[in-house]
Length: 189
Image (cartoon, rainbow, N blue to C red):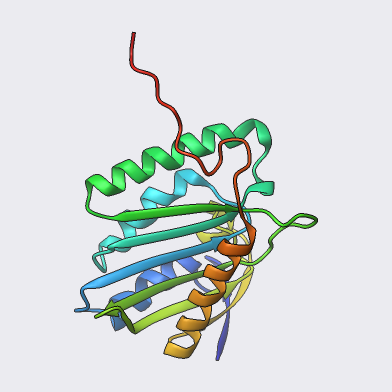
C-alpha cells in the first residue's frame, strides 16, 4: 500500500500521477479503461483529461459515476446535455463512454476513486487504482487542493474497485430530472 499527498506543490496531482504511472507501466495492452468515481464533478474537465491520458495509452472505455446531489438542480440539465455531447464526441473517436448519476436517499455519496484498468480476453491484466479525497474537479483532480490518497497496482485491488463501483451504480444509480436520460433534441426549425 502506498499513501501520498496529491497536490502540485507538495506532491503530484492525481491527474499527473495517473499519466506518469501509465507511461511507465502500461505500454502494450489493447483495452484500456478509465474509471471515475467522484462526488463533485467538473464536466468541462472530462475531455481534456481523456485527451491528456491518451498521450500515454489508447483509451477504449470511460466509466463515470458521480453524486447528482452535488450538482445544483439549476445546473443538472446543462450537465446532462454536456455529458451527452461528450459521449457523442468520444464515440466519434472510437471511445465508449458510460455515465451514471448516483444519489443516496439521505446523504451524499462521498467516495472518490480513479482507475486505469487494462484487459485482455475480458480479464484484468494490469492497472492502477487511486482512492483519494480528490473530486474530479480542477481543484481536486488537477492538484490545486491538498488531497491524500492511496494507490495500488494489484489485480485484487483493481477487481475490488470495479466491483464496488458496479455495486454503487446498481444500488445508488438514479434519474434526477434529466440527469441520466438522453435529452430529446429538437430538429432545427
